Amino acid sequence: MEEVVQQVLGGLATGAIYACIALSVVMIYQAIDHFNFAQGEMAMFSAFIAWQLIDWGANYWVAFFVCIVISFIGGIAIERIIFAPIHNAPIFTHIVVFIALFQIFNAGAGYIWEFTIKEFPSPFPDRLPFDTTLIGPHDLGMMIITLVMLLMIFLFFRFTPLGLAMRAAAASPESARLVGIKVGWILALGWGLAAAIGAVAGMMIAPVVFLEPNMMLGILLYGFAGAVVGGLTSPGGAVFGGFLMGVVEPLAGMAIGSELKLTVALVVIVTILIFRPSGLFGRVVVQRV
Amino acid sequence: MAFLDVANLEAFYGPIKALHGISFSLEQGGITTILGANGAGKTTTLRSICGMVKTGGQINFGGESIGGKKTEMIVRHGIAHVPEGRGTFVRVTTEENLKLGAFSRRDVKGVAEDMERVYGYFPRLKERRNQQAGTLSGGEQQMLAVGRALMLRPRLMLLDEPSFGLAPIIVQELFEILRVINQEEGVSMLLVEQNATLALNLADHAYLLETGRVVISGTSDEISADETIRQSYLGY
Image 1 (cartoon, chains in turn yellow, orange):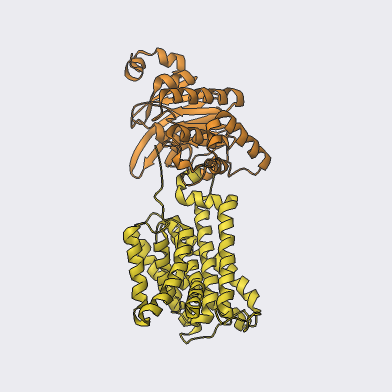
Image 2: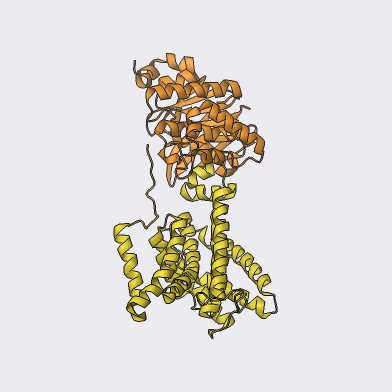
């Protein structure tokens, strides 16, 4: 029993990371109707930036917040420079650009920082102040940080005028322009936020998977899966889907053995999608005319 | 110069020219209607004023040239467009739709007052303030579209077929409110309608468009009396 609780808690901790990636993907999907394959690589690159700052002697938390700001600005720049001009281009144009972006970040990180595995520090103490064998200090810390961030993002979208404008612009860009919302900049802001969320996910997971250019590959897959299962039209659903993936994976491993755990996780996804094609929380918009 | 002055306006959808140099003007505080059959260019004219299509020619509003500007900047001059199809933000609540209408304003107090004023005109919207706007009826969504436009505290409202798809009783109610808004708040209006009788009743001036050209213009009374218009558009 204790082992199950350990696995579930550990799963929730990694699930928090999947949830962040799922949320970033959904935010961009809602704004431009495309899947950003490069989301994971952007997060990896952010983690390298933080590593570099720490390596130069910066305090962890200084590096943490500077990295978030750099990633936010970087996300905005990517939208303004690369995606704004191809906004109306067909889907294949987007796919090619996403693949290019993926490759640029992956190879770029390898070129600048080499492909060798690096250790990334955890900001959390080695020991928890209370005695438990159920969850490790980094897992617990990572879960708290990501949950706080997700809560802040929820509050931003739900209760601020800018958050409302972002929701409106994603759903009805033309009407948004008619009330004076600068839709282009709102899209860029969405990219910035997605990049910042990814940066936090990258910095939190790096001590676990170790820092190297390919570290986000598996995580991106689970993040995508979480986004699809939760529903691409529902940010909250994507977050839930991410956590779900985190928990299903180790439990499947326990039940069937680690060779098949990925398969089982994917079977769960397919089964859910057969019964709920738009995901668990994806909604079909009700509209009367 | 008139309040809204449009000269030699051309509009393009890709290579296709939809307006062939139309000119018209609107006096401050007035209601002007643009009549015409399907495809005459009525909606395109409104979209041109708002910078939603590529245009040529001049558009002056309140003494400033707004031709070629971006939609979101034109809105800031005080032009509120009630678009064809109502443009409801379906996934947010009624009240959030109204808040969005005031997005470009910074005077929090004025916005709150205007919200109450809109609820005064349309009590139904107040009852449904926390309902997802996509679930409102067609008539309610049209009220919401007008309400959202009012939240800008506009100097000019562009109304694209506000009567479309609504029951006659609702249309009557809506047009009565539009008249009140025009007379009491001095909001000028440019109205596009298929229902010519309705439009001529509300408006003081009218222009008739045919395939992207102005063919007849005059006061509403003159137009109502015109033999051709009566036969082709008023149907008696």
